[in-house]
Length: 127
Picture (cartoon, rainbow, N blue to C red):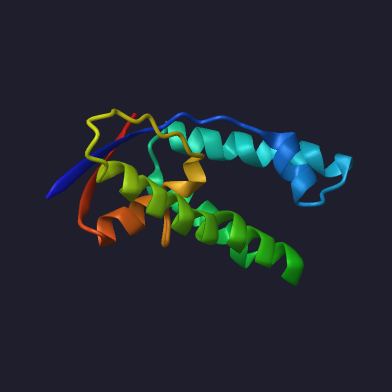
């Protein structure tokens, strides 16, 4: 079985995501608290709670357009990133690659980890 170790580099890029999602500045404080909560969940190694946050991100979106945005931001991007990661893993050049993604792309259904495991890779989280 193929083996892939993912080393997580977790960064909190609040303003970029909020502006892209069309949030107003007064919503930033709530978002910062939410991201801080997600950070703590990840640091504690609670992958299931982190996966639940990902699921809530889409299911509890306040509008249909935000729901579509969240689905595109997670599931659709995860498909594209997984395809590219698999290409790199099959690269015969002998190069070593360091791949960095946000933590929400590593947990839950349709995540990069989920998709790589479906393709036969063994994925190990490292904290």
